[in-house]
Image 1 (cartoon, rainbow, N blue to C red):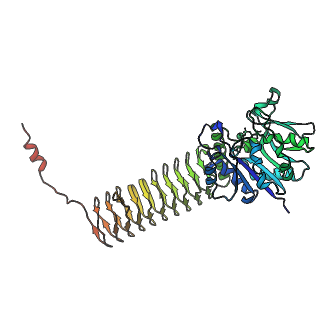
Image 2: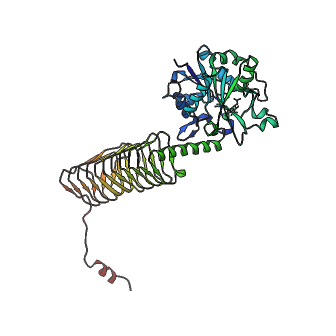
Image 3: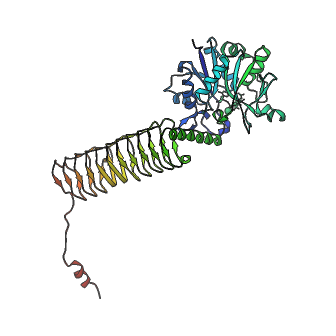
Length: 463
Ligand code: UD1
Ligand code: CA
């Protein structure tokens, strides 16, 4: 049987170095808050009822952010340090068997595979704990790990307390530990705030265990990337870039062509099929599903959308919360605001806006159009400059256009209004009443022609 794993995520701190009113773990990188990344990883290791998030600063907001993930919360009302934060969990976890894994909410790049290796290392050892370490070119800000002659941890020295010689040590504490549960709970109360910051440092545990006759081992990673923590906004940007690069790499290796991958922004929750292409500076955000053979043009923004196979999005198009069916062709410079369904092989061209609209199979709106709260039938042709007047200043109303209708250019459709199948609306019409199927509707002033008018006017000109 696998041993029980309880995982503690420390997320109570404000993060002074962020210079923000918002708790550090609520800042976003790679399309999610830092804490969501960390909890998602934790959930690959152990079920949510075995995950405890220690919250303090903006606890309510952190809990709300995680409301879809049934994890446990422990409150640390005063942030007296990482050791104190873990101590707060003793009431709920103190009698649990197995292992306790501690990770920090500000390290969103950590992978579940690495955590699993850490747990395996600890499970095969007699030590009280194993901690992940790595060597950094620039270890500034991290706790330095001092090893004894057997390679066990003698002490962890925080930046603030480090001597010059200690500060030169490049082996750093990642803040990720696997403890034998009963030993952690037995000894954690021994941490004392005897440091310049008057904090209870979890990093005192190796020395405490040594005094009790137990060792703490290290598990050193060659590549430090996964262990990077966010302490300021520069690091937030670096981690965001690392996540973007990781996602782009994953998609390229899975069969997506990305032009200038360093410029695109694709959220972790996006799925894309093979032979899709993504142009420079495109953004694909939220949980979007993009099927095979789609083209996402340069500088387009696709948020929370489902695109079926072979959809072509031309550059500078913005689409949110919409579904686009196979073979549809949209843009450049189109905007699909929310809750639209564009059926197969439809065409939406430049400067066309759709909101809450179903746009039929093979229908076309090629230029300069607003369709709001409307149902556009199959194979309808919407002429340039057509506008649905869906809003009367108080309420929104529907426009329905039947299959194969032809709406002449510059028509104004005053909702609520219905236009029947196979009908025609003359260019420049203002349509306020139902147009029956098969009819022609003209709603415009008749053209007046005055023959010879110009010559007459010129002869009246004052000499
Ligand atoms: C910590 C480690 C350091 C390590 C580094 C790795 C300690 C004393 N130092 O330093 O050795 O190299 O992480 O990134 O552990 N937190 C709480 N309650 C508190 C204090 C902190 O929940 O009272 C949480 C924070 O929200 C954060 C995490 O613990 O998610 C780490 O705290 P932080 O202040 O960033 O620690 P570092 O100084 O970076
Ligand atoms: Ca930190």
